[in-house]
Amino acid sequence: MRLSKRIATGLLSLPCALAALSAPDFTSKDSLAQTAKVVAKDLISFYKGEDKDWIYAIGILPGPPPEGDYYWWIGGAMWGTLLDYRHATGDNTYDKMITRSMIEQSGENKDFMPANWTASMGNDDQGFWAMSAMLAVETNFPAPPPETKLDWLALVQAVWNEQTMVERRVETKGSRCEGGLRWQAHSVNNGWDYINTISNGIYFNLGARLARYTGNKTYAEHSEKTFEMLERLAYIDKEGNVHDGAHLPKNCLDVNKLQFSYNAAVLIQGAAYMYDVTGQSQKWKDRLDLLVDRSLAVFLPKGVAFEYACEGVGSCNVDMRSFKGYLHRWVSQATVLAPHIKDKVMKAFETSARAGVAACQGGGNGQMCGFAWEQGGFDKPSAVHQMNVLGALTGLMMKDAKPPVTNATGGTSKGDANAGNKLQELRPVAPITAADRVGAGILTSLVLAGFVGSCVWMSLN
Image (cartoon, rainbow, N blue to C red; front, side):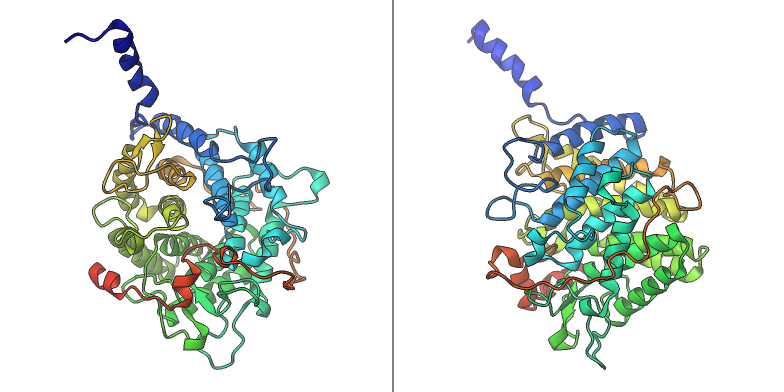
């Protein structure tokens, strides 16, 4: 039976309207950049900060739950993703948006701790914004307008200085946890007694990068001590597995052996910086190689990024769904300073990126990206899914990217070594809601219950 001309015309128009994201030529930087441009545009479609009717703060994605899907820190991660995209492609489309957002969320004390978010402020949350500012420093992103009296490097130094202070750390003498950076930034916050890898890992990462940029060895010394502490506590084990953290009341013996890719990735990137800072020392080469080899085995078990700890049991929250992008971005960046890992990383990540692009086949435009890359297909639209694929595409272009600048190789950010030296302690003024209690990474309810995914861990070995 023949279709009417009108119906046939309508059907013929559907492939154009609902076509999946076109796969790039993975051997061509220009082709990768064109595909990344489409993914970046779709990512920004989730951001409402430029809308006149937007009633929330500039610089963040809609949230936190239940008002929207995203916590405050995801905004910082998004701008970092776009800064990497800009560095890899030269596309400055989002420069004003990035600048305005990071200025807006820099906080009253110029330390990425705006008062609106203190009730759920984790050291990792603050650290994610600082990592984006550090990218701005290392890529010579345009400085904030003079009237703001802000400097990208000074913002990073403020965060690092505050997180170095004893007020943020375990002071219990003789404790295995002694010196560890706490998950939460304030003692009134639920999770204050959890000493986790991502908070300490970001601190380690920032210290290594500050050491390289400024030439100040003090930063590197603190990073060295932090890494050694993570090894001592067996958060990093002898096989190169990276676990999530432990609790102070348990003397940090109740190590949560769930493995998430962002924990490993932030350490890999930091280790590459330490490898460079120490003149390519054998010690840091060994540490870096161990982490890279084990992480590729754990998080790309079939050649495609897979968050086994949550994806394997169908329980990934929005935070966890963002981790694949950091894995691709941070480990790819490590190859710039540690070229000896480049071939194996890029080979693995190309296969994974292909799967990520193939999952971009949904949403209203037919090209929004999904999360389950290994399974294939599309599940639901999300800003973090776009961040993941953009990070994967950007990561592949890192092999041609310029190395991060330093203050001796053209870096323009001046900084302030004393920034953040007045730690602000939170004074509770209102009851903390259930929504407030969740920061970056694992849900508070799981962490505080001391949940250990032993069955998941066993299945990985």
